[in-house]
Image 1 (cartoon, rainbow, N blue to C red):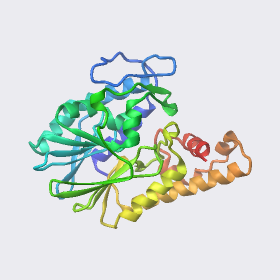
Image 2 (cartoon, one colour):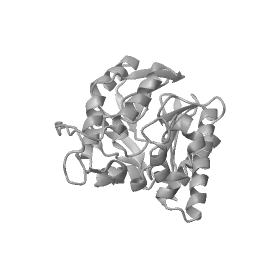
Image 3 (tube, rainbow, N blue to C red):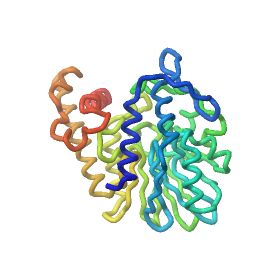
Image 4 (cartoon, one colour):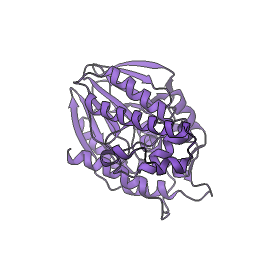
Length: 322
């Protein structure tokens, strides 16, 4: 695992665990988030504060596709004569670092931005990228969620509608194909998994597959139940991604290091096994507390339980989504 991969994982885990200490940040260019009381969200404030200081790492993948490891969801970029095509926009306070990294890749302007889903760590930079020239493309559900008030129960945070310039204007429902910079990009919508807005992007000639937050590589994933996410959908998304991939396909997760089909298959089997363990306990009539006490994740905790999504927290998400 490279230092850039470690940085990406540590950045995410550090930020998601910071839920105290409110910070005053300017509202300019930032979406408005509050907790249930209406006070500024400590989680979002800390996330943005951390993002302002973290260096972006660029990792060439194959052909002309590169991954950007940022403080937030893993990004990707395809430069060329049609302008840069960027997957996700990161956190708004990382603008200067992301912009510098993109310039270092090529002088091509930013022309296309694709959001993999609606969550702020993947869309918070939408406004500045749109101002730089990007048309924003996403699933129709992402457009809808960014256009309306949202609530993420897992971090107790209310999201106001995003500024109009940050909302995708080009949308699709099931699939879409783009031909840009000598590459063919296949986009497809997963059934609700991490959220109900998740899509994949497959760079056909490079054989690179970006599957965003349907894969947290190396640790238990966040499933946003408030946005329609569920464990069965996570397993189904992994199955669909595996069906698209070959042993040589480079697979970009939403968080964690770059992976491949073998690593994704291991992740999928972990999800399915824990789902089945929890489902069996729930069917027997066990309460959530009893299910957590039974430790249905025990055989996987050493490998997958080292993040802020603890075994008990992940068990809770699985139980509530069944």
